[in-house]
Amino acid sequence: MTSPSTNITLSEFCEVNYKGSDSYDGLEKVIYAVATGAQELEREIRNGNLLGMLGSTGNVNVQGEIVQHLDALSSDTFVKQLKDSTRVAMVGCEEIEHPVTFGDSEQHNYIVLMDPLDGSSNIDVAVSIGSIFGIWKRKNSKPLNPESLLRPGVEQIAAAYVVYGSCTVLVVATKGTVNEFTMNPADGNFYLTSANITYPNKTPYYSVNDGNTAKWVNGIVQAVDDLREGRSQRYIGSLVADFHRNLLKGGVFLYTADTKNTVGRLRLMYEANPLGYVSVQAGGAVSDGVMDILDIQPFELHQRVPLIIGDKRLVNQIIKTIKNS
Ligand code: P6P
Image (cartoon, rainbow, N blue to C red; front, side):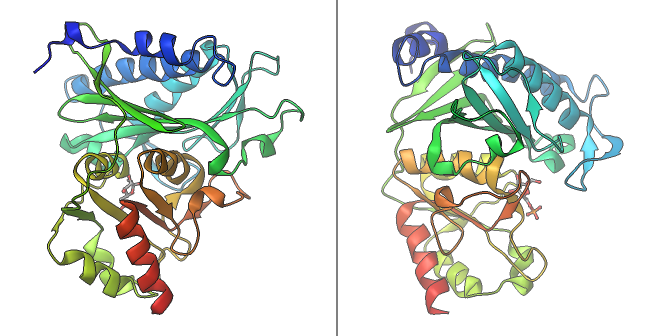
């Protein structure tokens, strides 16, 4: 067991790997914005019950979902931090109908798509929730407009997510490497706790909402039956937490299209793309059941997509079952 003092900090890691590099010029400022927002939000989440911060605002967001107090707070927190980074030109956010523009200068060279608080239904019951970020280099050749956000996932330069769970972890992926940082509550800093993460060989878990069985189509009943053999089901109701467990322990998550969610339930731009990027950099895969999700050319900021994500062998097994159905 290493003590926090022997683990390098997030800022030490970013200074070595991003600062001053041509490929990642200024990326460290974007990662610091995510980390600072997560530190602020973590305190609100841990104290939410005590501060009357739980429950809903009574408003409905662009998704048609009831907005929890912490949904609104998380959105405001990360929008402020990303703006203050001075490196982000535009943000797309699950909680905000339209893109938010911060700046059009040459140094505003990143685009960020985010789900600031994933798993809202778990907030009031002390179950893990998270935040998800996809990061693209801006195409400076073109003026900023809403279409600036509609980039295929394969063009991401980085992705990150936070899980506010039994501990608070920040996972950052860039080309070829996925690294986990854990927050030390004593000083609020993130310390490197797992470097160059790759999916393990074993796949003991699968994650699916069995309550949807009657609505499944296209061979998903058979695909899930196949997954049951020799595995345990783990389903938290927070995509980011299920994804993180499957990444570390081995497994697959699926939320496919069904007779109710005919194009899937989860969001392409700020859920499937960022986590799909992390999955692929860790040796996994991400699919809509037919193609690699990262190759999808988006047409709308809040579009949904069927999602199969995790161990490459299991993703391909599910795709094959769908194809043969
Ligand atoms: P269901 C949370 O609301 C979320 O967007 C994901 O985090 C989660 O995986 C999914 O929805 C849960 O959906 O229909 O199983 O409650």
